[in-house]
Structures are given as structure tokens and as C-alpha cells.
Amino acid sequence: MFTLTQKVAIVTGSSKGIGSAIAQTLAVQGAKLIINHRDSATEAEAVAQSIIEAGGQATVIQADVSQADEAQALVKTAIKTYGQVDILVNNAGITRDNLIMKMKEADWDMVLKTNLSSAYHCSKAVIRPMLKKRQGRIINITSVVGLSGQAGQANYAASKAGLIGLTKSLAREVGSRHITVNAVAPGFVPTALTDVLSEKMVADIVEQTPLKRLGKAEEIASAVAFLASDEAAFITGQVLSVNGGLVMQ
Image (tube, rainbow, N blue to C red):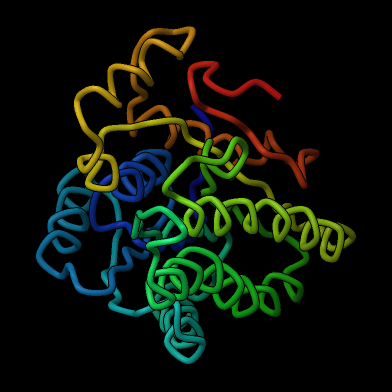
């Protein structure tokens, strides 16, 4: 277990799914958590309550991080609440799947704003306080689809591939100040985002995966916890694939 005692972490989109698992895993290891949601107050409060009942500290902050002013307000409120931000996990994400010739421009824009622009806004907001402390961890949740592409998900794949480029570029900008920037690329994990997949598609994915199963949210969370820890201090600009071997780099 990696200790994150006295660290403060923001996890965007952490009211459910992988984000919830990440928040709870970081809390178990000692971090104080900011649970962020856009419009899932009940679920976010439940995540925070579970952390508190387990002896941790958590605060819920509503913010649409695809909007620059709300992302900045999220970080300011986090610092006001806990005095600092040490870890940012850019996890907020949505899908709006369709073949590109049928894809509405609004669905393209919404996915790019939610999945990619949100990471830009939140990272920009935390960089200055992290630079002052000369330390920090930024972890972007990308996807196996950002590595391989996927028919019917041009918008989602573009947003997730963009996160990889953002990760590597930002890592080069802030590395001299002991701030690391990495990405975790989950494979297929049962969440609300994958519930829309047909049974046949899920079966095909499992068949193509060397480990012959879907992933677990807790397995993604463990990878994030490692990258957030002091033990990962010499790792930056990397993409850690947690996909059961579905895509090998």
C-alpha cells in the first residue's frame, strides 16, 4: 500500500464508476478527497459519506469542469477547504457514440469539451499552486480506445488520444518543478459508459482480451494510486495501460 497521508486529491467526475473507485482508493491510503460531480449530487454525497464512515475526509463540490470558470472555482474551493491540492485526477468523461457520417456536431463538441477541455481547464487551475509547492501529481484517465481507435467512437477516441498528447506535453513543461503528469488507459470496465454495449460486443471484447475478462474499477484505481504516490516520483509523461492485454504497446 502506498501512503498518501496529508495529501489532498481532486478527482473529477467521481460520483460513480471508475471515478468513485479512484476517490475511495486514494482515501483509503490517507488522502483527503474532493468529490466532484456535474449533476449527480446524490451519488457524490454517497461516495463522500462512505469515505467519512471509513475514517477518511471528503468534501463534495459541484462543478461542470468543461467550463473554465467552474474548473477554476473547483480548485479554489478545494484549496480553501484543505489548504492545498497535491493530486489532480482528470477523470470526467462521457460518450455520444455514432458513426461519423451520422454524428451530430453537438455530440462531437460535447465529448471533446467534457473529456479533453476539462482536463486542460483543471490542469491549468492547479499548476500555479503546484509550482509554488514544487511538487504535484496530475493523472489523466484516457482509454484503450485512445490507443487503438474504435468504430462509432471517433469523438471519444479523439478526446482520449488528445489526453495522451496533453499528458506528454504538460509533463515536459512542469517536470523541472517536481510535478509529474501521467495517464492511465483503462480497458473495458463495467460502468455506465459501457452499459450501452451489446452482449455480443462485450463477448467479443472478452474473447480478444488475453486475460479473458473485463477489468474492475478497483484495478484502475490501484494504478492511479501508484502514480499518485511518492514511489512514482521518477515516472512522468507515461501512459499506463490497464486493459488485460487487449492493446499492447
